[in-house]
Image 1 (cartoon, helix red, strand yellow):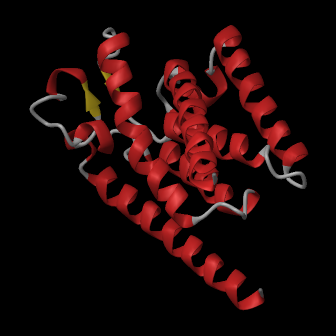
Image 2 (cartoon, rainbow, N blue to C red):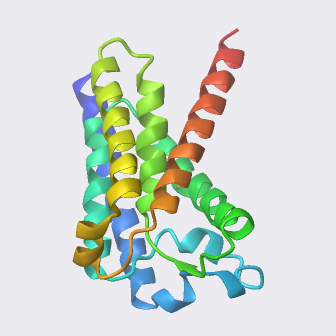
Length: 193
């Protein structure tokens, strides 16, 4: 199992390196890639890229650090799961903004997607007896964080990244994370039958 583990680890490190470098490249031309409500339909790529660019480099670094933790705190998760979530969550969150939160003019950052990834992966890990406690703790922390932000606002983070924290993005990430995890679990069960 050791060789297997190393391969997984290498793939995860490559994935992290790819995500970090693609995000960094987009970052340089971020105005072309952020979610900007008025441009979303002629420039459809923004549905995705908005979540891969950041307000600034500190914002970028914080989110990349959070992303780097994911493969290591949930080692069972496959690389394709991460890739799938990185591709599926952005348009879901962007379209939710567009259709339900029309007053959001602009958005950038992986934060919403990260909330979704952590949520979806933690929910799936509730099924593994060994991981259950840890997964529950992660979900509990995410929930606590959302309530805290809703109540007190994300002021400390906002000061750090120099832009207001969109709690809605976090909330939408969590909601879509739950939906994706549920569909995934239903799918896995159907194929297992």
